[in-house]
Image (cartoon, rainbow, N blue to C red; front, top):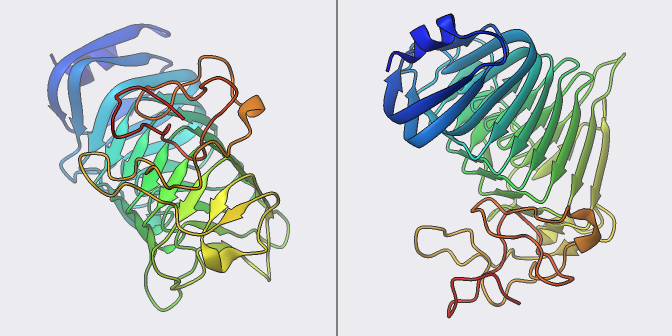
Length: 311
């Protein structure tokens, strides 16, 4: 299948079903469409530019794809969203770069994005190794992971200018802020003299193994409106957040899903279950709710003796 040709020939609001396989090159999306993976679909830019560029009014949906090999001159190695609305679900965004500006995995310079059950892993950028939300961009990130990404400002997530960001039921772990001006290994928030970003984090796990530059950074000179509630934060973040827990995340750190919760994790059963919609699923597709309980972070707890969600 020639995916670029299919995109060019598609009518607005068409659904393009993509057979399993590796598709190389830059995808420019200039009309509202749905890209739906049928099997294992890898979109690989081979470092020629952003893997996916979205510049259109209307709604673009991308589901079930692995997005790799993007390298942006400016923002958005994996995905560059400049206008319109993006719904990204059940995708893996890894090994993308934006060294000059930022948003190694995802850059939102304008428009809105709803990102659900996605994994941002090992992306790099000057700002926002995993995700950079800039200008008046808006992001809701839910049931997703930001793991092992790196940047100078905001290894996992960077929110700046007048951005609006909501992070719900996510796991943000082992990201890095590197360099002399490094800050905010997990989250970096700052505004300007005329605008300030708004960032809300709830029912999440934020975990970094070493203190290093502050894990969660809200600029003291140009702060944003940052609220953190009902989340598990590193021990050295005590006092930050409302109704939060502090200490080690208690990840399993074994097998193909090392960031699953262990039996001893204090994140088990600690989420605000009333905040979850009926039928909501974690990043692996398992139910988030079991009876009246839910777990902090992107993974629902699974006992070692069972393949089902349990408490």
